[in-house]
Image 1: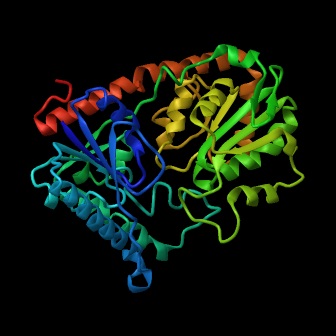
Image 2 (image 1 turned 60 degrees about the horizontal axis):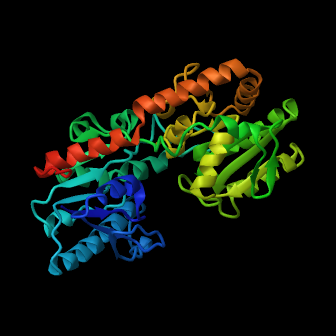
Image 3 (image 1 turned 135 degrees about the horizontal axis):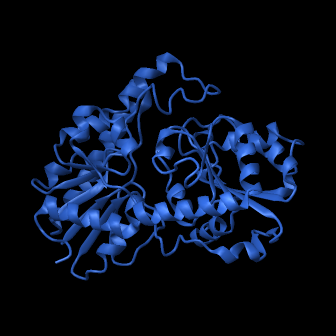
Length: 410
């Protein structure tokens, strides 16, 4: 079969699916994206350059749609070139977030599209307004609602939709939910697995050493920012490090902003370090930036407590992978997280905006070895039951077979 993938950042959510499809030598995979250095042998990459927006000519509430329409046009032109060269996909798979798929039915009439619906924006009841430290004025609400124009245009294609969690599905209006299928994402249970001996060996990352007698607390997100609770974790450090002198903390993440507003100057890490200067022992905390995947997994396997904080927003892959590694997880008590973590069964839920509660929960987790062992086992058991990557891939294959009328495994 011929597969056309579209996502502005190759390979996006599709790394594991692509690897699975590549096992069948007769499959041809073409991926349209913006240029980057990522590569997968067997995938033909086709680039388009991100459009330059013209915000001065566009109403602020329409800027996201303006950018999406420009992307849709560029991707359609790129796809038309592929068509002229003889490539005809049997199915198109991509992410609706940036509008890239919207014009493809005109290029490939009748070819089914499986589009990823990640998030429906709402000025109330989820991420916006959750954190009182960063209030959103009501005059911003129209802009937030207008961000759903791409969602609505995508739903208007009357194609096939997917989303990975029940919470994300329920963000969409009732009339839209019937057009989006729930297809949970998994984790590589063979790679992300418990390593009981890790705590018995010296551990080191970027020269930061943790001995077997010391306790390691991990915190991971793509970028260190408030949407992922970085400011709360930082404010939990003084009490945690004061009460537990054997603790070392590693906080993985870049200095960019993935979600929410950027600072006018500097980074959130710099801002929080300045706020807390002199209030905690900085020699016991490492900020390694973003790390290679194997180093990240090794960190989770060594971690005595893993802290996962987030606004009511899309749950990170790192939460699933931490569960697969059998981490003792202390997490924010918000709906996207409680879909995975049951308090006292496979992790601990705490008020996500309370640094004292976070510090207390982590300190308590370090003090109770029997409970920690039980919660770790519960996290891994949940992963084995609900997060097996093969189950995720089987669901994808079944969906492709349904919408194309062809068995991708035949």
